[in-house]
Length: 236
Image (cartoon, rainbow, N blue to C red; front, side, top):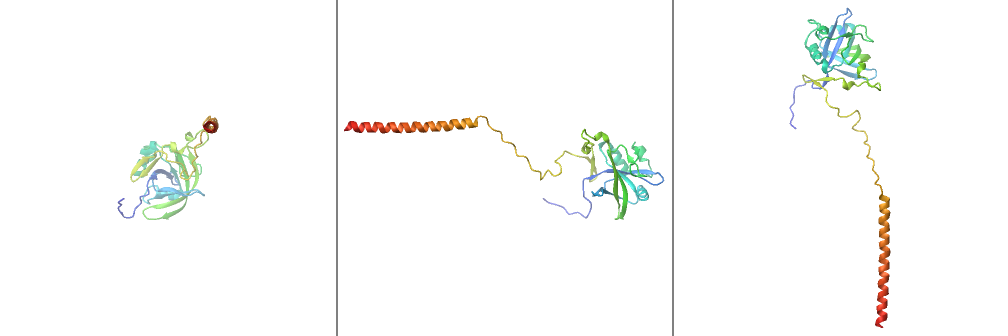
């Protein structure tokens, strides 16, 4: 396989395309679309977003120390793109995208997007000025989920919400399931052997037949000896 070597760059795709909602302490709120996001720790639950300092939402996140990661779906794909290419300085993204502000359960300033199936509430723990982007490292303080995706057993069916991903400049929906976590090392159950009816009887019959054939062979041999003896007596 022939390969080309390129200059250093980020080619870690696909990524989640999320809408981040935030607000400052004066009550001004905004939405920005981010792909530079992810999980950094399980316990305590922590996530990050990387934002350019010139973005309109940057000062809001830095001032309030709060933001919400809202997962996006096929139905929200237009709004997801719009909130990534338009600035909150010029337009009201809530109004233009017909999105609804909701109250966060653990935050004071940042709202959630009601139309998103999952809202991940975050409080900033530190800011790392890396270069073109500053990374907001945050602790997850609460998660809200859409109850309409709960099944009868109380399990949240996240993969039925129509999640989308971002890969190399394109928005994509998720494909077919290939397996579940750990399936590569899970032991396969051996198929059970089905017993054939009448096998033992058939075997017994075959054994009996062999035994009977054996007796017949002995009888024929004995009869042959008698005939030979009789001929010898007659020759005398």
